Length: 181
Image (cartoon, rainbow, N blue to C red):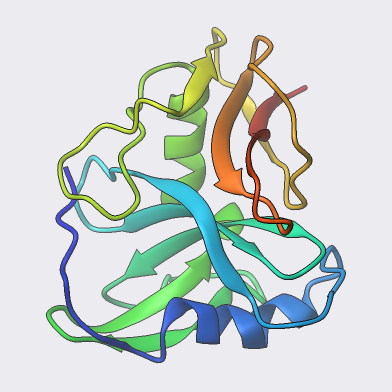
């Protein structure tokens, strides 16, 4: 299980995302600053890549941004996959990638959809996030992320549902990802 370090990171994740998100064709900016609104982590079985499904929100919309944190650049990364680099107070330079374009993240999201990966708390080491609900599927699912979150309920087969704080401040749950066809 991943260790969460209580340290500094410069620039911070929200700063990196504030520069990267406006360049994405699915982003619809509201007003005000981005805030952290929820999420959870997954473990990389090899222990090399940090995986976080981070929810950020402005005053209008909540977005799901899966993040990959790496200790070195991702070989063959697609154009636009790099979100940025930051200096971590314990681990040194980290390369942050859009997890939707990172093979390790995609493999773990598929494992989550099969019920074979365990969601972890976003900010607490070695702690299962019991609030994440998974309705697993058989086989090798294609991962379909919901970038813009819409409040919903419990998962249908092939869905992962988790909680976050909506732009109006209410606690809600939404489908984060599905097993695409």
